[in-house]
Image (cartoon, rainbow, N blue to C red; front, side):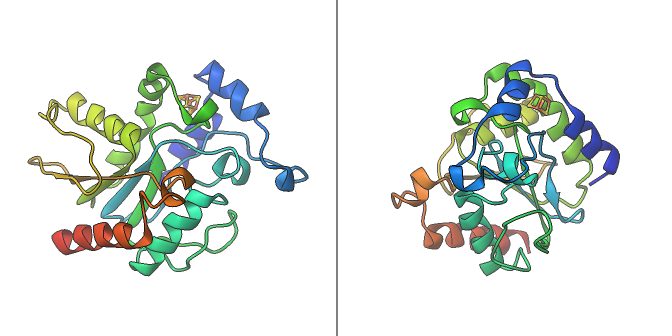
Length: 220
Ligand code: SF4
């Protein structure tokens, strides 16, 4: 992704509540001795990506600590393991920024680039941060599909479609749902790979693999 966009994201301080939170939120005790990133998190992946995976926001143990989206927390463990199994990643782990992870045909980003308290950004914060998602989308010209992880990411992407005057008000979030609109990538929805879903069987490796396979078969 363009350095100038990533630099603008990393320097952003537009949301006072989130700036305060990202700079002070503790992570688990086992990470206490590490230097934490504590800045906004740009997207990461293949600039030639045909699949964009849109998450909610960084987590305190994950990207706010490590400085890379979907890196170093249980959601990353689930997601990257499954992306690797489906051929979208060169390795099954996403542990830290220098771990050698490369994504293939896939780009990861979040609707909100700063860690929010209790994983809940305010509507105004989602709206403010949408400027960066808009720019990321313009820099990914080969996109064929967007996979929104969870309800908030799904709504954030719907807001993007509405800004482009694309009729999508009837689109409802449901795991595995797929929506098609002329001139824009297919939109898919999945439960978010957070522990509250993956530890309870709401989202399993098998169901996520099925969805990735469906996305691949329709696109390729
Ligand atoms: S959430 Fe987005 S708009 Fe708000 S401070 Fe972070 S990067 Fe800036």
